[in-house]
Amino acid sequence: MTIIWDESLSINIYEIDKQHEKLISLVSDLHSAFMQNKHSGHLNKDILQSMLDFTKEHFLYEERYMEKICYPDILFHKVFHSRFLKKITIYKEKIQKRKLFLNRDMMIELMEWLQHHIKTEDKKITLFEWSQLKL
Image (tube, rainbow, N blue to C red; front, side, top):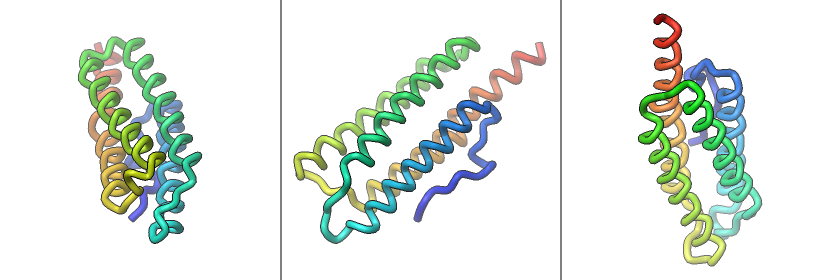
C-alpha cells in the first residue's frame, strides 16, 4: 500500500495542493525506505526528519492561510495538526533510540491519516472560502 497524489486530494488552493503533493511524495519515500529495510529494522532517519520538518512547515502555512481567511474552525484544525505532529515526533524519537521500528501499521496509519485529513478537514477550508465569495 502506498499513497499517490491525484485530483481527489486537491483542495483547489494551489500552494496548499503543491505542498500536499510534496508531503505525499515524502510519505512515499518513507514507505519505499521501509519496504527496502523492513526486515532489518534500519531506516534512514533523514527521510523521517525531512518528512517531519516539511510537515511542520506545511501546517504552519496552512494555519496562516486559515487565519487570513478567518476560517471559523481553525482551532479544531490546529488540534488535528498538533496531535499528528506529536505522534510523529514520538515515533521518530523512539525509532532513533531503537525502542521502536517503523512498521506496516505505522505506515498505514500515516497514509490513512494524511488522506483522510486532506479529503475531509482541508477540503472544509476551500468550502468555507468559496462560501464567503458568494456573499
